[in-house]
Length: 374
Image 1: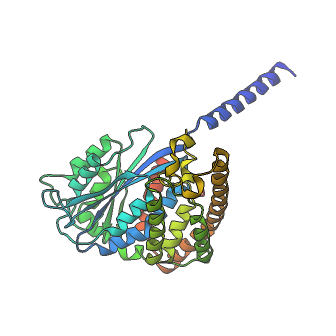
Image 2: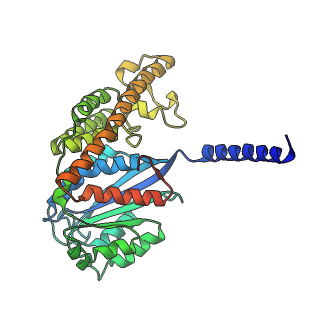
Image 3: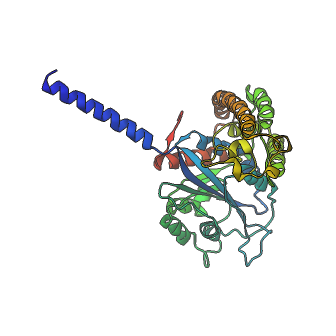
């Protein structure tokens, strides 16, 4: 081989090695924090129903991202009679948490009623009251949704100042106005998003709660029943965690077939993790050792097992779960295509779920995530 050919060969080898090194150095996961802030005053029942109906769609959108998001969700309501004037009519229901079933339970428990809606104060409460991930490459996003002037309470809590503070913390603020776009502009909701470096969407909340049945729904329901049998509750949170999982399955089912299937798809993905009460998820955590769990915290059927028997018992459940989740994911793509076509044919415009999905997709990709199938 001549000298030029040798140089080309060396360069190819070096390029291949560098590509492999880059791929191996790429993180498998990245933090994603999402805080949802809902106006729960008397006129917002449709908005609340739409959020309940579509929240799993947003989780599934993030589930398409690579690196896999380490998702945490926080929940705050404003304009609520559950809080006093001194509290700004604001309640922080949940700090940022990876327990998606806990988030869903709190969302289902929200009630409508109240009056004054202070958008600026709600943003400040979320900025200061949530435990945002400080890592440089984390995606940090707020969604604030309502239908009254964003300038309510401007004398004490101007959203313009609050969104600038969010910018300083690299937190994106998206605004969702429950009404027509022109009125949303009049009420300054577009300005909330502009200053918050987020998306402004005017939505019809009633559209967001429409349920579309798909051919895959019946099989997904069967798979969900099988999936639930693979969970192994442990410790003081075990039985309550399992009971809450089943309760939230029921809540999604009562909302309608589309919400139920969206939740099942989320349970079949990497973002749904219950390591705090399920041994199958817990044993996958880095640094896990059986000595970290006392015999008394194990389910009764495992307490007399040897170390090898414990490993085998959990491995059987894990293999079962992964097989079920693989089938769920295989069905989800065809289901999503069917649902999106039905929305285009029957409804013709996007609701709350689509607005949130579009925003989170754009902002994740701008932050360096890649979207599979986008």
